[in-house]
Each structure stands twice: as structure tokens, then as C-alpha cells.
Length: 481
Image 1 (spheres, helix red, strand yellow):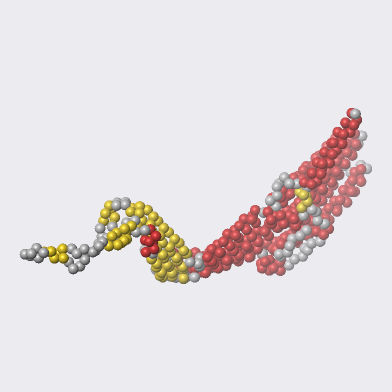
Image 2: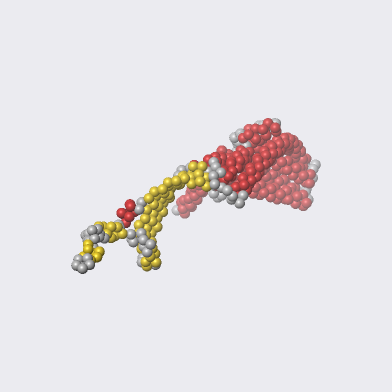
């Protein structure tokens, strides 16, 4: 029974380990370079901010088009008035309260404003181009960052592998020295050097793993991924990576890049925007012609209306002397009968309309228009200088990139030769050390030289790839591994 329980416990533990391992494997997400680029383009917050700016630019463009339409506004007010006021329709005043309501609607359309409305539409359309160029620039820069980080991960992975190999060599050497020391063939100094070599190899592995973790974290941040998500990058065929183009003509690369580079397009788009600002500023020199129309009506409870008239009477205007006979006027006397004036009737009867033209001529505005034109011209000159600076800087970067690629190619060739020489030297030293012809100091020196040359070769190899991809980026090519 106890045996069965023990077996069941072991089976449960194995099942738990398998389940845990299954979850661990499932949690390891494999990422290719293209997937990393796609995720960055879909999730990166800098790109989303640029896209929001694009949307704002489109809204401004639509509004500048809407500014050509008439404006229509309505207003109304109502309230009580107290105190001494004029009696409606008379020149008399009285102290009484009144309730008044006024309503009006105004329409205004600009017929001419020095071309400012049309030029503003053109400028906003150019601003949309600027925002689109800026988004393209951010995307291209981030794609380059993803490729750079991806390559750095590959470099760090190779350095980790090399560090582990170096640990194996150091541990094997330490075991041999320990055996020889126990047999009395090596000194304590030899054993201490072997242990120091193992400790150094372990330190190198720790540093390499730390750099690998940092580069992986950087890639996650570019993709806006949860930093706790476990990922592994897919390694491309390294033999295919080494077959990269290393010969470029700097002038040809620069001429091509000047026509397609997002930085240059962005600078040129901003230049055109500032050029349009001059036309907008000059529009303030011209008159503004507008057409307007209005509708209005009002109501007051102090207004009355005539409901009718009293029956005609013939007033006595005098008496005949002697007979005292009354003299009656031949003109009848009629008095109007006043009554309340209903709200709707007043509004309908008080309704009035108006239409006209308005001309505003700028005569003197404290040189404001002149100053704005001057500032717009200076901003345009500054934009031209920025464009030229961007072109000069791009040309310089490309020239430097071509030189760096040439240097990286030579460094890789030299590092490869050094690595092969140190590898052969370590093999010979290992053989001589095993038979006691070489002391531990010479052996440790050979191991150190081999480790350093191996790391240098790995970094030089990826440096050539990276420098070549940089030039592909400036040529507008899709960067792939």
C-alpha cells in the first residue's frame, strides 16, 4: 500500500512537472523580425501620437473649407424691467414694471478677405502632408531601432553561447590542474590561476546574459509588450546573413536617399507650409467684404392693441346767446378701446428683416500686418535653412555609414584571422600543456586570447551586417534578415 502511495506521489509530481513545463513552453512566444516590426507599427505609442496629430490636421483642413460657408447665429433674451421708463409709443414716462422679449437671427458670409480663406485651406493641406511625413519618419526610425535591437539580441545570444563554451574550457582546465595539484605536479599558484580563470568565465557569462536581457527588454518596449512576457527571437540562417553587400558608392547612395528619405520630405513639407504662411499674412493688407442679413422681432406686455371704438357722440361745443340753445359739433367723437396685445400677434407684427454689405478697410493697425508678414518671411527662410541642414546632415551620415561599412568589413576579416590563429594556438598550447611542456600562465594567456578573439569576431560579424542594413535603410529598401 505504501509502495502504491509512493508510486502515485511520484506520478503526481511528474504530471505536475509536465504540466508546468507545458505552460512554460506555451508561454515562450517566438518572434520573427517581421513580426516584431508589425507589432511595433501596430502598438507603438509614438506612432499612435503621430496618427492623432494627423487626425487633428485633417480636422483643421475640413474646418478651413467650412469657413467658406455662411455663418448663421440666433439669440433671444427676455426679462422684467423695473423703475422709471418711457411709455411705449409716447414721450411720457411712468414707474411700472414691464416684461420684454427680443429675438433675432444674423447671417454673415465673407465674400473677399484678401485670399486668406483660400490660402488657409492650402496651408492646412500642406500641414496634413507635414504630419504624414512626420508619421512616416517616426515609423522608419522605429523600424531601424527594431532591426538594430534584433541584431543586438542575436549578438548577445552568440556571446552567451561563447561564454558558456569558455566556462566549459575553464572548468575542464581547473579539473586537470586540481588532479595534478593533488598528485603534486602543480603548485597552489597554478590551481589559483585555474580557479580565477573559471571565475572570470562565469563573470563573463553573467555580463553577457545581462546584456541579452536588456536587449530583449528593449525590443519588448518597442513593441509595447508586457515586459514579463517570455519571448525568444527566431535566429536567421547566419550563413545567409554573412552574404551581404559591402561595396557601395557613397554619392549614389546619397543622391538616392535625398529623394526618398523621410527626414528630407518632412523638412521640405514644412518649408512649403511656411511659404504659404506669407500669402496668408499678406492677406491682412486687403479689405474684407462681407454680406449680412438679419431677422428680428420683439414683445412687451406694455404694448396694447385697439380692440374697437366707443359709440360716436356729438359733443356740445357751445350755447346760443339769448336762447341758451346748445350747439352740437357736426364731427362725432370716437374713442379707441385698448386691450392686451397677444404674444404671437406681437411677434408676427413686429417681425422685420434686413440685408446689406459690409466693407472693412484696414487703414492703420499699428504695423501689425507688416510685422506678421516679416515674421512669416523669416520663418520661411529658417525652414529653407533647416531643409539644407537636413540634406547636409543626411549626406554626412551616409558618407560615414559607407566608411563604417568598409571599416567593419576589414575588421571582420582581421578578427576572423585573429580568431583562427588563436584557436590553433590554443590547440597547440593545450597539447603541450597536457604533457607538461607549457606552464599554466602560458596556457591561461592562450585561453584569454582565444576568448577575446572569439567575442571580437562575433561582434565584427554582426557589425558588417548592421552597417549594410543601415545603408539599405537609407536606400529605402525593406530591411530583412
